[in-house]
Length: 132
Image (cartoon, rainbow, N blue to C red; front, side, top):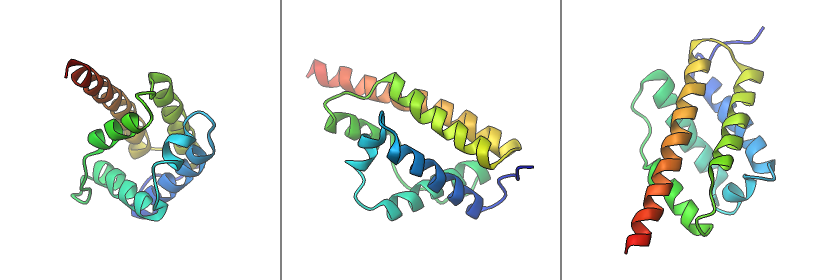
């Protein structure tokens, strides 16, 4: 039987397990591995992000939409919807391997919404850039 996401340690395990998969993935790993220089700092920041969203606490500081736009620009506007699909599938796989319950389901739905939102932000930034 799987356990529920109950505390920050659970979120940290989820984030770390997920990014182990992401970093090894042939389709999306390079976006992360060639961008993130301090993985420990990044994992802590992402743990803050997910903890803030799953437990409704005010820990996360950042602009993730802007960060995704910058990564897309770094990679010559090559991030596509399929990349977000790979990311989302890995996230759901990781959750399903580790957790169950209401917060696990919320983490899945939030990730789906984030993927769509970030993809749209990237697309809109490209459109603005092309108008300049």
